[in-house]
Length: 236
Image (cartoon, rainbow, N blue to C red):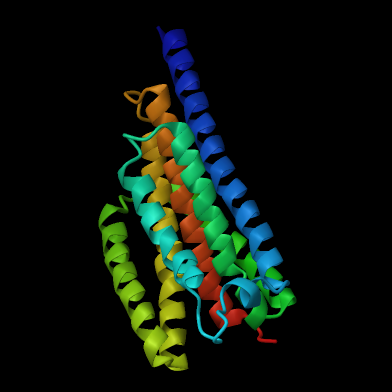
């Protein structure tokens, strides 16, 4: 009997490890694609060629690149059950590509050395909170719900500040962002751990949820990175 229990636990742990390998695989592939696209766009004439129209104003392509990822992210997370894994991967790839085009603007504002150093700080903070979320026995559900409401408020405040242009307001949002995105990293890791250990999920749904999990962690990493960059980054 004990042997069967040990075999079952070993099998469950292997399924959980495979799930997280997929989650982090999707996340790292998206980060790599976004990073490559961002570097290309930010160190070339891409923005002058495609984001500025003949009259010197902002072209419609800018708004497409800026806001389309919001819709794509919602589609992936809300409609993943109805979409095939191939479709989800395609949408995820497009999402990462568009995010890369948006992220390229940081190369126009911050020095490459500060971007690189902030990336490593982000990786350390993200990794620490991911481990905390995976290992903690405390239920983070209420904590995550509170942070998610703060995030929605931050999103609205960021849009408002695009018109106000207040540097102090931007700094406050960035500080709040560090707190919110590190906290949500721990929360989502705990949620993903629960998914990975759910024996009732079939292979296809588990694969889809791994992709959705990779997307969620990718979004948190990018937002944490941008928040820290606004605090730590040195401008050119």
